[in-house]
Length: 151
Image (cartoon, rainbow, N blue to C red):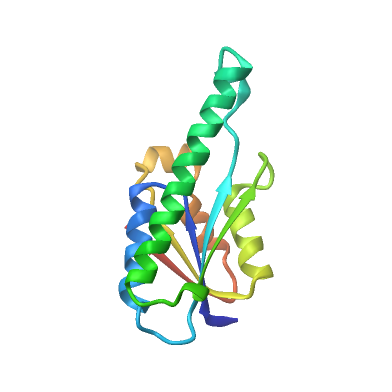
């Protein structure tokens, strides 16, 4: 694994933004570093919306929010000193299976990422027990890489 090949899994949250800032501060002036900003896109359930138009509108809002976040994250990394060619954005569409954590781990392995960075969502113990936590699943299941969980 190449520890200078870094995957930051983001979801456009404040915790993801902190993970980007942390990575930028830590690695901004390092040479030979390559950073991929990864967003796993999962469409909202259609059954939560009254109409197809309402669902499509929500999908567009989420798409715009995420792409604005990715643009801002890129600016943060470049401002810290990473060269433009060292920062890549990637979006992957994910269905219900496999899980978001499993999709992140598959991409980490396929891309030979030696470091995986994720923001901690901050679930309560009860929420984490009921729903699981992406960061916890990554910590427990990642192999052959460093995992940075930023809170």
